[in-house]
Image (cartoon, rainbow, N blue to C red; front, side, top):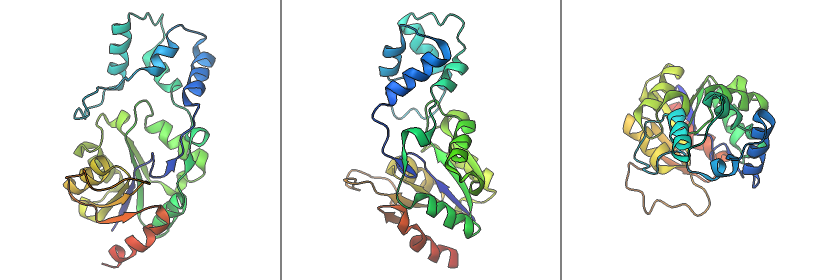
Length: 232
């Protein structure tokens, strides 16, 4: 094993802030002043409803919504709006038990750690900043966000980008994530091993993809799972 790939949301961090919309609205007002479309924008589903659509073009999705609503952005660049939508993870979530220690353990075993995350507005630069704020960015050799790469998990392109950053082959890496279809299925189809971080109440019952190589309820168990792979 040469690389450890980690999902972010509900794998490394969880417990999302109950007032996320209020915080985001306040950020928009701070950046652009008051605008009448904020509430509708924050309540809208921006990404396509068809979850089989894995190509991601965030700014095009933004643009289509504003055109459909007949909203005049009055010179507000969509890229500036996208950046303002991104709130620091440490302000709106908390670490999953054992998650940061698991990242430290992987790094300490010489594994190249890459974060592979499906996002809407958060790009690679914002992901890097999140982990700088958490104080462990020095343990991470690369990040891949679906916004920046243009493809969402389980598409092969996002995993291929992560493997390129880790400079290793699929068979020399494992993926850790909470989403069976996106994290486990996507990784396994490309030849990686996969560890499913099982959230409370989650089950394999309705999942028909390739099975995970291991299941953990929190990441305190990850070293015990991975150690035999390192020996092999």
